[in-house]
Each structure stands twice: as C-alpha cells, then as structure tokens.
Image 1 (cartoon, rainbow, N blue to C red):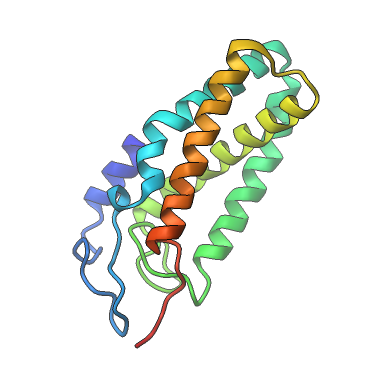
Image 2: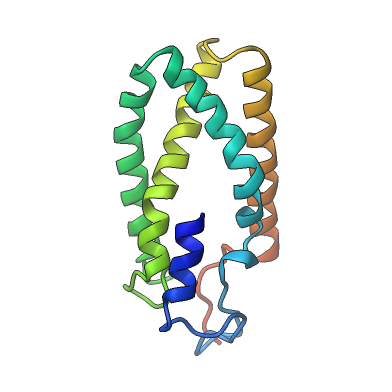
Length: 161
C-alpha cells in the first residue's frame, strides 16, 4: 500500500483528484476514493494472515499461488487497458499504465492468489479455527467494500456525454 501511495504522489502526470474526465461527467479517482482502498488496511491483512498460516502449514499453498498471482495480474492489466476502462490513478488514460498501476499489479495478483488459496483451503477443510474466522471476517469486509464501489459507480465503464 505504501508503494502504491508513493507512486500516486510521485506521478505528476495524473489529473487533479475529482477533476472531470474529458468528454464525460465522471470524476477522476485517486486511491482514497475507492471503498476497497479502505478495506486494504483491515481486510487484506486479515486474509493474508490466513494465507501465511496456510503456507507455514504446507508450502505447496505458496507454489499454487504463484501462477494464480501472475494470471490474475495479467487479466487485471488487460481489463484496465481496455477501451471502456474509466481512467483512474493507476491507468490515467486509455492504454496507459501509470506508476500506481505498475505498483498495483503485483499487489493485486498477490491478494487474489492469497484469497483463492484461502478459499480452496476453506473448501477442503484445511483452513479451520480462529485463523479461518479471522480470514472470513477480512473477506466479508472486503466484499462489502467491493459492493460499495459498485454502488457508488467507481467501477462504471467510461461514459461519454
């Protein structure tokens, strides 16, 4: 998170926060404008805690997570470089990856991989006890924030006026 915040601050090519994206009536979003940003401080550490416990228990969880990390980061990159992606702090214009975007890609991939490994181990009953509950609380909080981003329109496609 620190690297992404720093990258956002260093990227002087970004439009001003909440400025209107040209040709639309949509606001340009910075990291703190996303509901999911706030869950990154609470929810993600809780999920990562469960993931670390699983890796300590069986290192195969780490190795299974690596391809998931790479694939999810590449899918996210392709999605964000799409023509209808609304510009934001990580992808400031069509086809452009900003400093924050480059910092966000491995973070996103790692978080998706950790969550996927936790879900798999939950299904196979290898994630149990207090660690499971801590991970589930983190997952529930993150999903709530994700829904908040959908409801606020943060994930809307680019809409020309």
